Image 1 (cartoon, rainbow over the protein chains, first blue to last red):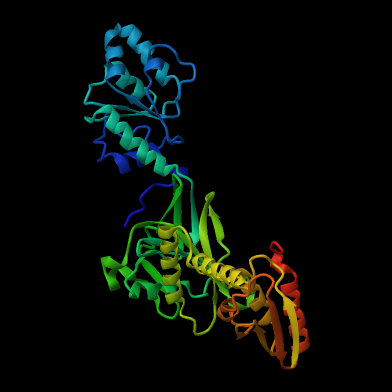
Image 2: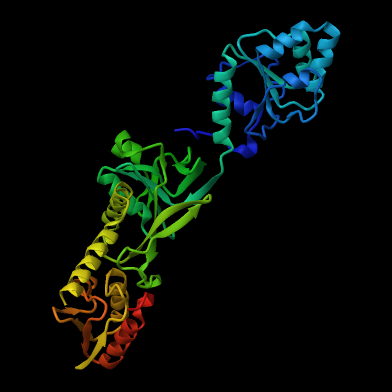
Length: 321
Length: 90
């Protein structure tokens, strides 16, 4: 397992090349110049207008995609004008440029890149598909994210985020779930990214699919239970808080009160389970996940259905009177 | 044994949420507590029991208790019922 997306804080041109070089078939004509320049924007720019002299609002802090339009424009110019046109772009500190479609960049473009220590990549791929792949990747890198202390597990496709103070028994409970055939996504540290209106959780590359079980130490779930017991990424659909029994007042016994927890601005349904000696937390987590699936499928919880039946019965009793 | 009669004052009667409120009040006490409707008599500390009474608004129910803190217990349950559970009254 590798970290799917680099940290936006340290995201440089060199890291972009490491991550996407193969996929986008990038070939650097400036060796590794400009590799430590930072990429700060999830957007890209087509520098056509800037090359033609209109530099107002030129997005120089974006990755520049030079396609057929730009190259055709440059090729039509005299050598002097071409140097000036390229300078329009390179007078700004450009992040890096990618020439697409296997086009060969004019001499002036290459020398401007070399002089300003800016990476210039060539790619044989068509412009639009390359832009799609690139912006998809950049969108993920710059997506809002947060690291949470908890354990993420997939129960019948439902992502259950188990939280609670350390040593309350999260890992043991989830180990029980793995034993019952569910899949571990991340233990102890869950990285959650916001993708549209969903939350996607993954683990840390270093920790991999290890769990720390008190008294035993690090346990590799992938090695002990095999690939069927692990999952690389999973949406976060339900949060479960394990609470010390003495901290819980008997707030809700019926399950009619819906609780939520906000993660990156998205409301995630939440249940609170008091931990008491002898309670089978594994079983309770499984039931919580199944109830959430059922609630989504039917549009209401079993508590609501039971209550509706009860209210209807009381209505009939009243009529009889 | 302490015993008192109270009328369910809210429109919907004792459905799941009010039942949970009664049980929450009841578990605070050590004594045995019962709620009785014309149909049945159940343990006030059991949410399923209290729900099965299906006591609609206007029904007279009897709250009784036996044990060291029976007076306070009955008092507390009556108070919860009289409050109408924070719902619309008849």
